[in-house]
Image (tube, rainbow, N blue to C red):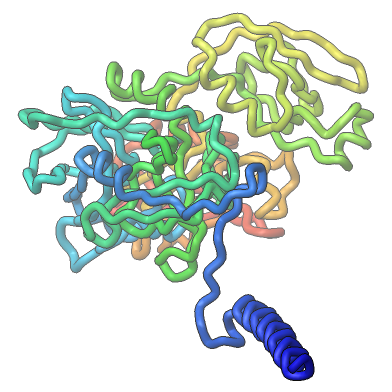
Length: 487
């Protein structure tokens, strides 16, 4: 009897051991990599601070609240000879699309309601040159819109509709508070698909797009939320439902999204919109210098304490900078009591300075710190770095910048205006000009800026041929451009 009980106890013990072993084995198998089980691997998101598992975010409530504020924008504009013109945020821009046969050019974009009075924010390139702008709301009602103001340098525009009731404005956030890795959503009308929602994270901040016609005010938010043609002008929204950016451009070799999109920070929009609503344009301060970054090599060669500030590469004659005594080779490290850590900080700070204000500038010159006082002037539109059209000649030109000089392998003191585009079949193309050429003279007069180039063209009679001195690589040659009206 005792033997039987012992055998029975041994059997129970053996079964328990086998059971534990099977359980351990099953647990190990269930945590094996998913690909070994031919099943998707689903991992929880862990809050390492509290040790809890959290579900991925649900955007449905956020989207439901925001959708009435997002609008579809369609435009009609006159057909241009070159058809595929570029917007300020990249060559071959994927947002300038849907070009048909010769005739009116049609395009689509997005926008969002700013206030109950019918003001709507979108991109400059969405409404640029439009002869008709139509806004369609979430309820499918359509309204003709008027362009109130538009700014090519920042790619921001304000339009307005009248007669619409129950408009729901979107709250604006603080783009400076955005963190890389933070969740964001984009809402817009890609390829005409109304109110499409995509989600992603903030991939980077303070991005400048590497292109010949880049703006001095580039300061993009980079995101991997899917942005496609038609998303232009739509909002980038944080998880509290606040707009933190305007979707504006993508990096793409195919025209579609590859996970690299760019949005204009909403804090820049806050600065620009009041002027656009009141004046239709933006008044900016102007210093009159060309600058470039200070890297470690430059800092070492100039005896600087660190790679900070904006190195002056050129001072325009009769400019505020010239009158204040700023010289080529100076490093601007402080402007109006604001530190200049990066060269890209300076243009926006100067632009936002009231015209006529006297400010102190701290520069490092030959290893010594000097304080100069400058009276900020008004930036004239033709004095900026944006391409300016010479329609009768069929080309666009822009001011030289340090970035363009490096790309064209030119010395930083080389002067002239850069040909940014040439219209196929135009007088400029027939004269042999092409994008990337540097025009250094018009007639017998040197030109060092777009303003000077425009002045020389304006002094000529209609239809008069234009002699230009062109530098292309190591070659310098004269070309004669015969306007279309010339016999």
